[in-house]
Figure: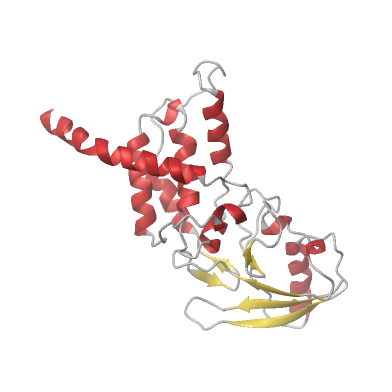
Length: 257
């Protein structure tokens, strides 16, 4: 299998970038997209040139680091898979494949296909921790949790923070990511004490990082490798406005004390 690559090359955030073409020949259709990039980089290195920089770690669709836009789609053409789980059999022999980094103001470019997604880390940090004592694992039935809530919390916790939702959104919104991180704790009893504080702080940090507004086009859900639902955005909005309504009364009670 042979393909032509158009890869975005940029030495750093302050230097101009451009697309550079590479030929990838003799490929096994069953190799992953990142394995293909490895082979291309071997050829580039043998020619004494700078290899393509791209992010990766687990290569099992867990870490969320393999963030690439392939032919205009975050993570590529397959549904509910990350870049590392995209295989060359998803493309046609002789096809020209365009590869570029996630493009968003809140994800500044580092080099080539690598962007800085530490904004996500700061949003999570803003949410803080849970006040429930954490020691040895409690008995599974010690805290009753309705199955519907437990299932929804597990679905939200599946978010790997890859940033595809931001890359796909025309507004570079992080609402799907933030709503998943808010909801997986807010749905459970252990997360209830800080529920209001958490949602207010994380939304405030999201805005401070420069992410855009959500206009509910659904592009984020369509490219999410874990299939995080738009329903979590609706839930976070309910939690957020409820917290805003309760905030003045809490402030008054604290002042009275």
